[in-house]
Amino acid sequence: MNFIRTAILFLFFIFGLQNVQSQTYNFKTSGFSVLEKNQKGKWGEWSNLDLVNLSVVLDTNKHRIVVYSQEIQLFYILDYIEREENDTDIVYSFMCKDNDGKECKLSIITRKKQDFRKQLYINYDDHIIVYNLFSV
Image (cartoon, rainbow, N blue to C red; front, side):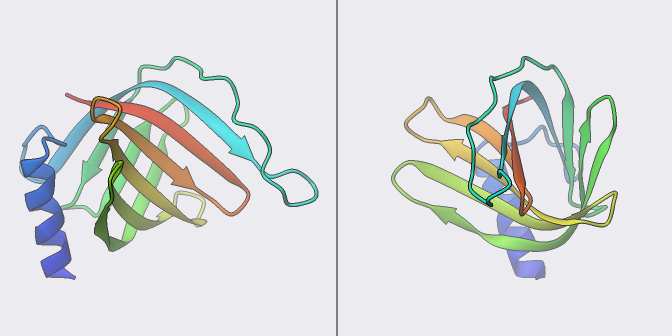
Protein backbone atom coordinates (compact mmCIF):
# COMPACT_ATOMS: atom_id res chain seq x y z
CA MET A 1 0.00 0.00 0.00
CA ASN A 2 2.76 2.49 0.89
CA PHE A 3 4.71 1.46 -2.23
CA ILE A 4 1.66 2.09 -4.45
CA ARG A 5 1.01 5.42 -2.74
CA THR A 6 4.65 6.46 -3.19
CA ALA A 7 4.63 5.33 -6.83
CA ILE A 8 1.44 7.31 -7.52
CA LEU A 9 2.90 10.43 -5.97
CA PHE A 10 6.11 10.06 -7.96
CA LEU A 11 4.21 9.54 -11.20
CA PHE A 12 1.91 12.47 -10.48
CA PHE A 13 5.02 14.61 -10.12
CA ILE A 14 6.56 13.33 -13.34
CA PHE A 15 3.39 13.78 -15.39
CA GLY A 16 2.60 17.21 -13.97
CA LEU A 17 -0.72 16.29 -12.39
CA GLN A 18 -0.26 18.47 -9.34
CA ASN A 19 0.59 21.74 -7.83
CA VAL A 20 3.00 20.54 -5.17
CA GLN A 21 1.94 21.57 -1.72
CA SER A 22 2.93 18.75 0.56
CA GLN A 23 0.90 15.89 -0.88
CA THR A 24 -2.07 17.90 -2.06
CA TYR A 25 -2.91 18.16 -5.76
CA ASN A 26 -5.16 20.97 -6.95
CA PHE A 27 -7.31 21.01 -10.07
CA LYS A 28 -10.05 23.14 -11.60
CA THR A 29 -12.95 21.85 -13.66
CA SER A 30 -14.13 23.31 -16.94
CA GLY A 31 -17.20 21.14 -17.53
CA PHE A 32 -19.09 18.04 -16.47
CA SER A 33 -21.45 15.44 -17.88
CA VAL A 34 -23.50 12.56 -16.44
CA LEU A 35 -24.32 9.09 -17.74
CA GLU A 36 -27.12 7.09 -16.10
CA LYS A 37 -28.55 3.60 -16.36
CA ASN A 38 -32.19 3.36 -17.39
CA GLN A 39 -34.87 1.28 -15.67
CA LYS A 40 -33.77 -1.78 -17.65
CA GLY A 41 -30.19 -1.43 -16.37
CA LYS A 42 -28.74 -0.26 -19.69
CA TRP A 43 -26.53 2.79 -20.01
CA GLY A 44 -28.23 5.78 -21.62
CA GLU A 45 -26.60 8.76 -23.29
CA TRP A 46 -24.13 11.23 -21.81
CA SER A 47 -25.81 14.49 -20.83
CA ASN A 48 -24.78 17.69 -22.57
CA LEU A 49 -21.53 19.09 -21.23
CA ASP A 50 -22.30 21.80 -18.66
CA LEU A 51 -19.64 24.41 -18.07
CA VAL A 52 -18.52 24.61 -14.43
CA ASN A 53 -15.58 26.18 -12.66
CA LEU A 54 -15.04 24.11 -9.51
CA SER A 55 -12.04 23.22 -7.39
CA VAL A 56 -11.00 19.59 -6.98
CA VAL A 57 -8.41 18.59 -4.38
CA LEU A 58 -6.65 15.24 -4.09
CA ASP A 59 -5.15 15.08 -0.60
CA THR A 60 -3.12 11.92 -0.09
CA ASN A 61 -2.22 12.92 3.47
CA LYS A 62 -5.88 12.83 4.46
CA HIS A 63 -6.72 10.06 1.95
CA ARG A 64 -9.51 12.00 0.31
CA ILE A 65 -10.68 13.72 -2.85
CA VAL A 66 -12.95 16.75 -2.58
CA VAL A 67 -15.03 18.31 -5.36
CA TYR A 68 -16.08 21.78 -4.23
CA SER A 69 -19.44 21.94 -5.99
CA GLN A 70 -22.50 23.69 -4.55
CA GLU A 71 -22.96 20.57 -2.43
CA ILE A 72 -19.43 19.47 -1.46
CA GLN A 73 -18.59 15.98 -2.71
CA LEU A 74 -16.20 14.29 -0.29
CA PHE A 75 -14.62 10.95 -1.23
CA TYR A 76 -12.56 8.99 1.32
CA ILE A 77 -9.87 6.93 -0.41
CA LEU A 78 -10.09 3.29 0.69
CA ASP A 79 -7.53 1.92 -1.77
CA TYR A 80 -5.02 3.28 -4.29
CA ILE A 81 -5.27 1.23 -7.50
CA GLU A 82 -2.14 0.58 -9.52
CA ARG A 83 -1.55 3.01 -12.39
CA GLU A 84 -2.70 1.82 -15.81
CA GLU A 85 -1.40 2.99 -19.17
CA ASN A 86 -2.17 2.14 -22.78
CA ASP A 87 -1.70 3.84 -26.16
CA THR A 88 -4.38 6.44 -25.46
CA ASP A 89 -4.66 6.91 -21.68
CA ILE A 90 -2.86 7.13 -18.35
CA VAL A 91 -5.21 6.20 -15.50
CA TYR A 92 -4.87 6.71 -11.75
CA SER A 93 -7.79 5.13 -9.87
CA PHE A 94 -8.98 5.12 -6.28
CA MET A 95 -11.62 3.03 -4.55
CA CYS A 96 -13.57 5.46 -2.40
CA LYS A 97 -16.52 5.95 -0.11
CA ASP A 98 -18.52 9.15 -0.58
CA ASN A 99 -19.97 11.37 2.14
CA ASP A 100 -23.21 9.28 2.00
CA GLY A 101 -21.26 6.07 2.63
CA LYS A 102 -21.65 4.75 -0.95
CA GLU A 103 -18.66 3.04 -2.53
CA CYS A 104 -17.43 4.31 -5.88
CA LYS A 105 -14.36 4.35 -8.06
CA LEU A 106 -12.69 7.63 -8.97
CA SER A 107 -10.27 7.79 -11.88
CA ILE A 108 -8.08 10.63 -13.08
CA ILE A 109 -7.49 9.93 -16.76
CA THR A 110 -4.99 11.71 -18.98
CA ARG A 111 -5.93 11.44 -22.67
CA LYS A 112 -2.60 11.11 -24.50
CA LYS A 113 -4.05 11.64 -27.97
CA GLN A 114 -6.12 14.65 -26.92
CA ASP A 115 -3.31 17.05 -25.98
CA PHE A 116 -2.99 15.28 -22.60
CA ARG A 117 -6.44 16.48 -21.52
CA LYS A 118 -7.37 15.32 -18.00
CA GLN A 119 -10.71 14.03 -16.77
CA LEU A 120 -12.08 12.89 -13.42
CA TYR A 121 -14.55 10.01 -13.60
CA ILE A 122 -16.73 9.23 -10.58
CA ASN A 123 -18.15 5.74 -11.18
CA TYR A 124 -21.16 4.41 -9.28
CA ASP A 125 -23.15 1.28 -10.14
CA ASP A 126 -26.01 3.28 -11.65
CA HIS A 127 -24.38 6.49 -12.89
CA ILE A 128 -21.08 8.08 -13.87
CA ILE A 129 -20.06 11.72 -13.50
CA VAL A 130 -17.18 13.09 -15.54
CA TYR A 131 -15.39 16.40 -14.98
CA ASN A 132 -12.90 17.91 -17.40
CA LEU A 133 -9.86 18.93 -15.32
CA PHE A 134 -6.81 21.10 -15.58
CA SER A 135 -3.98 21.51 -13.07
CA VAL A 136 -3.61 24.73 -11.10
